[in-house]
Image (cartoon, rainbow, N blue to C red; front, side, top):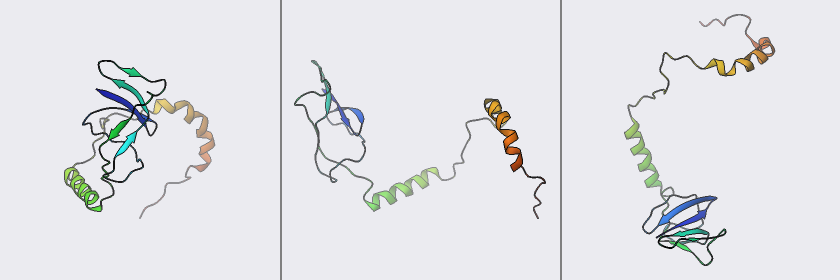
Length: 127
């Protein structure tokens, strides 16, 4: 059996023992949360609400808040640095492919005369 709940402007399909990630909700870490906005209950005989299923609730066992414990945040940062160390950013475009300048050709033709007064008159000299 599963249910479709609405929280934070989004819909989630939940079932028993599911772990979902949602936006910040009212509740301390370790507290139980009740979701009263149940849009559908699925199973052998599904029930659809219009818009909500009357009398239906979904209870969450506990709220887990990972981002408030400084030790866990620091551990996550350290792990991320270790896993990404030595990796160089790779472009999705091949290096020999030119940028698609044809896409803004009309815009450039329209604005190039207006921007020409901002062009440099001479090349800068770097010493």
